[in-house]
Image 1 (tube, helix red, strand yellow):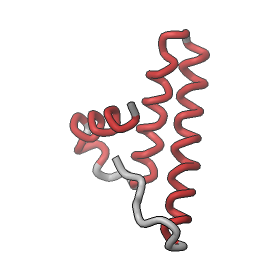
Image 2 (cartoon, rainbow, N blue to C red; image 1 turned 45 degrees about the horizontal axis):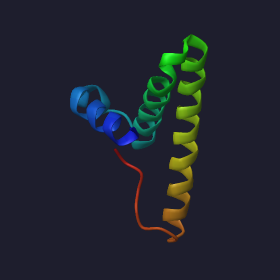
Image 3 (cartoon, rainbow, N blue to C red; image 1 turned 60 degrees about the horizontal axis):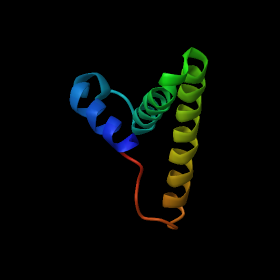
Image 4 (cartoon, one colour; image 1 turned 135 degrees about the vertical axis):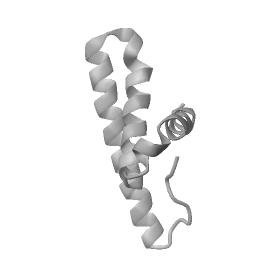
Length: 79
């Protein structure tokens, strides 16, 4: 779901997202994915899903960046 939403956002909002950093793009994609995932349950779960999606994307991006700098892994988190 994250990859599909990331590809869709990149395709539809290419000009708007071009000035953002990769971390900001990942956080936006995580927020949209979390919000969409919980949107059928109401407004509060939508807000919680959006916050959790953004937070998890932020933590995952920073963890992968740290491991990549220390040469533990050799890939990056991009959509």
